[in-house]
Length: 87
Image (cartoon, rainbow, N blue to C red; front, top):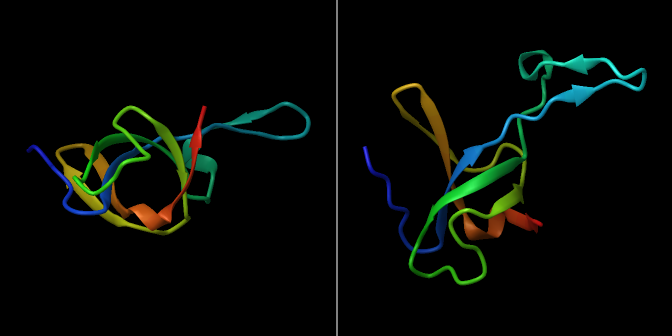
């Protein structure tokens, strides 16, 4: 399935992050109860200028609509839910 966001929407694939305790123990992503807040932009709507495909962004927790395509899960977010670009 090919997904193309409309208007001011962004298609994102969430990036799972490993959690490290203060003592240096790495916790796998499944142990974390927090949803990831960093993702890679896969596609953007026509009305978006300051974010492009391939950017890594930080977005608001629990925002957007989840879309499943086979085993993959994507998010469609409004541009206003994106907080920053990670460089």
